[in-house]
Image 1: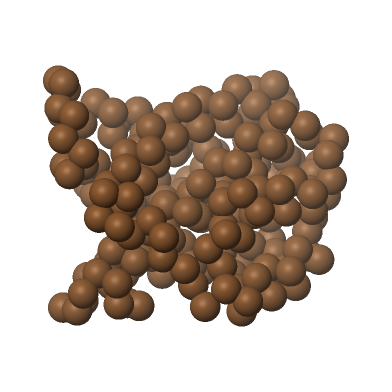
Image 2: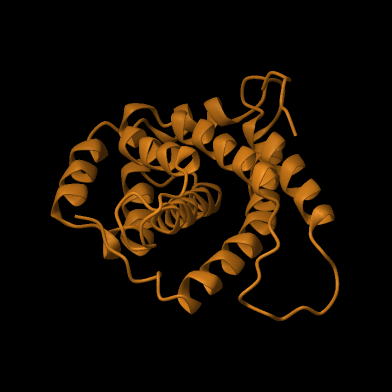
Length: 202
């Protein structure tokens, strides 16, 4: 599915909602409880992940490390080696899922408490999603990035499409989360099944 349209300023969340809604329609129906089989169309899901990168870009240089991590995971292809090797597609999938977990946690906190300091929202989201799996190098990079956080109003203004209200943004974020979380749960169930959920970085 080739994408040629331009994403208007502040419309990344709406575009992600649209793509996830299409993904749901493409997924097979029925009572298939085989956790070894994940029915997620790859190209549309990768496009959604790229939209999430654009959302992270709104936070500015603070999220550069995470953004690059997601971007590399999206672009990475499977090597001939085992799944646990550093450049493998399986490891990339683990970190992509965790990065999306972080994004969901951050957006949830942002709309639940828009008055809270951005640094605190990011730190809370990081602590429950990425910190348990980061080694000292990744943790140190995060601590430096945390000092460059924009304020909440700036981020909300950047996320909000022109001529729309905060209430509309909040509704869009909640819709995005409700659509994205089931896909993440499905991915995590397979990672657990194959013993890939405990991988850590350096």
